Image (tube, rainbow, N blue to C red):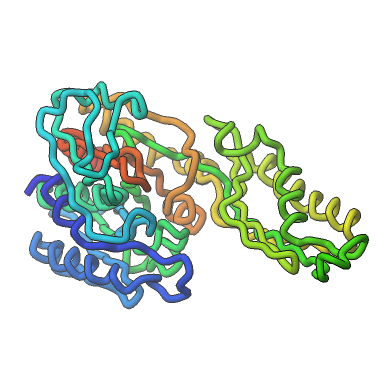
Length: 401
């Protein structure tokens, strides 16, 4: 079976994770796909494949005779999707021989265009897969799953030990929370969760979440003069203290940012939720200090206790760990060179499960899936790109011999 055929099957399973849930997995629907994947691995000869109580799918492929001492490596992809644009089943559309121009997405009124996504011009003549424009496609990261599965099916010849894992809850930052390193069993691994085929990511953001709370003095507006402290307005004032040029819409490359992701407020109490991102560790720490300092600015103006902040570390830049384990990059580059592919290496303006796994002792750079415009109704991928990724995975396996 081709990788794209698997993708078209997997996206019919709705698997949005739920950031408001404290359970693991955060949504029971992820088990539906997990069980399907475990059975498929077993059908492909990975007889030890299983689903854990926390909805992780694990499987190991033994080394072929004479290759038992080859370094064990693994491949990882996640089963969950974002929740937005995911309120009804996905209806994928396959467009053969795409002409490189604007493409209406079903009857949604949305148009996938090279003006919005210039790389589409390079896909002229390829077979393009999209949703109907009313949902996500789900290629993030069911494309990665499909490519790993197809690699398993196509695996022939000598190879070392290979581990497979499909994880839940990556989209809400919990993809490694219950990861069983002993069950996985690899020394090095690769997440398959990026964009362009040939992408090789090993420099991610350092990431934190900040929750800023505001407590007001709520009185009748008719008697409010010199008494009321409107928490909602104080929250708005706090946000104006964040530099406008250091927000996602004004930054790119290695530039970090502060991003306001949620607001909630009344005159009595208010709350702002931010994420803080930066590739450089020292600048990342300065950003956290700045947000704390601005809380003190508010408290000096309106009274102690008006504002408070809680900052929680989410993940760190994996580059420091990868630098200590260069083999994972060297082997991937060697594999791509053998396919006449020049690796696309760029700083990731985000993170992957590999960020956390690397700091937990499993060096784990990220590979592209061939998918684009993740997390929204313009998500798309090509059949040819997926086929190339499968070739890369097989070549990485051979590179470790």
